[in-house]
Length: 168
Image (tube, rainbow, N blue to C red; front, top):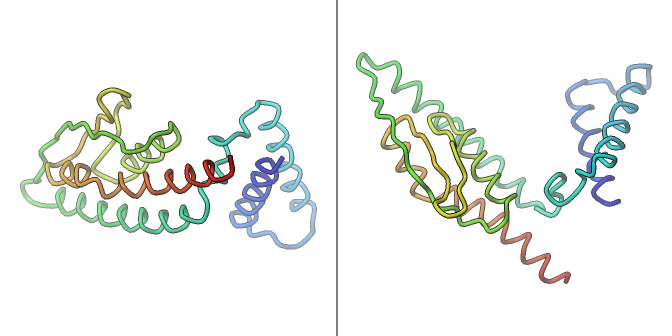
C-alpha cells in the first residue's frame, strides 16, 4: 500500500509539473482521474513492487540525478566537439564492464545511466561477463571503465540493502 501511495504522489507531481494546471477545473479533475486510473492499473498488473516503485532508494537518488545530469551534459559536449572537427576523432570500441551492483534493479540503473550518457550505449547485460558497452571513442570507453558511475550506482543500491538488512 505504501508503494501504491508513493506511485500516486509521484505521478500526481509529474502531471502537475508537466501540465501547469493549478486551478480546479475540468482538466485538473481529468488529470487526477488519469493518475488514479494508472495506479489502479499498476496494482492490477502487479507491478507495484520494489523494482517498479523503488521508493527505498531513498534521498540518495536525488543526489545521483544531478550528478548524472552533469555527466550527460559533459558527454554531449564531448560528442559534439568530436563530430564538428574536420576529421572526426571517432574510434568505436566495445568493452565489458563488471557491475558492482548485486540486484537486477541496481544493474538496470547502471546500464541505463551508461545509455543516457551520449557516446555510450549498453548493449547487453550478462550475469557472468558484465555489461557490454559500445563507446564512440576510446576515451569514452575509459570513462566507463573508470567505474565512477559504477560505484555511485552501487552506493545507491548498498544504501537500500543496508536499510533492508536493518529492518529485517
